Image 1 (tube, rainbow, N blue to C red):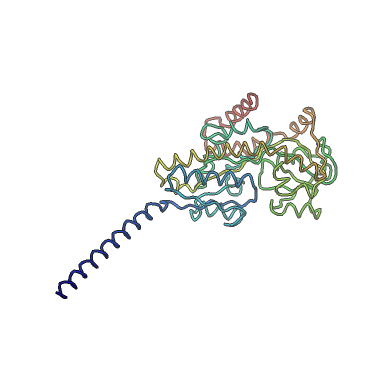
Image 2 (tube, one colour):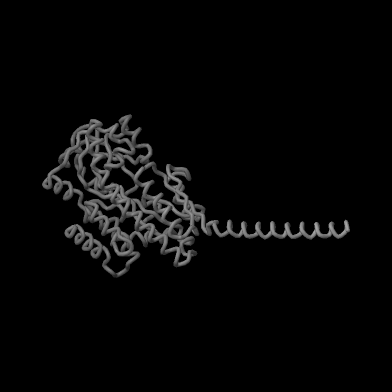
Length: 358
């Protein structure tokens, strides 16, 4: 009798163990299903609230529209390195996605992101940078492919002006003997040099991260900047005068390692594009809405803002000599990548059309 009871107990134990094993298998299977197929990192070198919010929205939308198949984690504020370090990480694939200023020292064709006296407002920018049909988007798409990246969507820096600590700049003559900080954006540099030609103005290349200190310590007299950066980078604390010249438009580019992009299914590619489109629209709207607050903060901070007349703006624009800048910097790249297509004139015609219509 005891032997039969022991056998029965062993049978029950075996059944219980089998049930537990089945439950564990089902639980592990469920966990496996919840685990993302793709876990990507999104690097940003900057500390910009609106930008971070837009890029976080993109990450959240990808998670939502992919039903959890893809998880993208945003690493802002230089958590993954400097601007160029993150770029090279994305280029090699150790980081999948990032947001960048496409300076020509890392993206030769990136000069089309920063061409003065072309884009003047939000509506024009939205058309010119529209994915996939905007003229600047098309040119930058090819430029990013050239360095192993897939261009996804565009961020907003906005309209650029000129700040300094010596005098209000109302005409090109007011550049007299000023020393300006410049970057690797060659078209910006050429246009600024042309506007200050004959005035004794000089330029110095200083990293963006070091600009505040350079202004504070009088290493340079002035710089180009834009409304949001004047506040979020606190340039208004170390500048006395700012001319709202609107002489250039600044954008940032969100790009993906091209090999990683090509490995995605068409379904997930559509999810990413859709999420990027929504994040971009949010980016534009938030930045446009915040511009009035930026201006108020700058004025209350003691900066004297000058708004030039159309006649005064025309003087700066004519002296910038943009046809020469296009001939020197833009045409060689366009001829190389669009041989015998007269792309320089086509691009100029399209940008002129956008400015006239918007």
